[in-house]
Image (cartoon, rainbow, N blue to C red; front, side, top):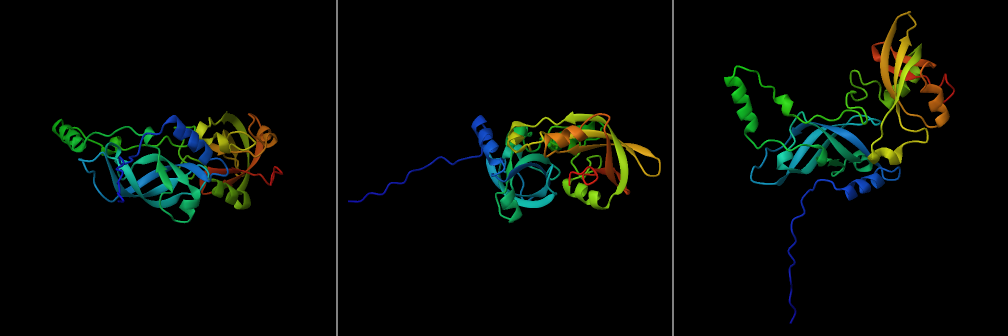
Length: 269
């Protein structure tokens, strides 16, 4: 007689990352792994919270912002903890599998849930808004949105390509070709602390540097900008990331925040 037996398994639910998970992340974002850290700015979710569930699936749309890749629209089906349910306007840290993202496949984005605090139970936000109204105060729901840590290694710096965030690599390359010539004096050079998750992909030139530059424009005016620069060799880093160094740069005449080191004039290209 043949007997069949069904083995019931406990449903595997998303968990908060453990130390071994971060070790796996280290391997994944190595140059051969094809992964990158990013910030997901959520533009919409396709269903409300299910208050009776610990975890539930939901379609999430948003824009991925990288330090060294162009912004990319994405739509993902995610299994989320209901106490960390995402909302439109949230900004959350994610791990992105670049090959799946480029091919438009699902499961390209993984939320780093450990970085998010649990949210109040459903209805608490409405209660807070009503209490503020009764006190004659204004309640701002955006205070309860998740906010990313900004650029890796610098919580106060806007993302590249946004106001005050300097240029993306693509914008810098375009400026080197077509930007207005100027000179800049380095007034500060600060090494960017690299999280352990990213140490596997730091180039030979060391971690990036945030440069503060005093720009001398062709019309005689000056202004100060801050930009992040990476280096392929220690020699190039020593030549550029040095207080007092005078560098050739290229400017976007329409946006004083956009500046690029003129690598061609320096003989790097």
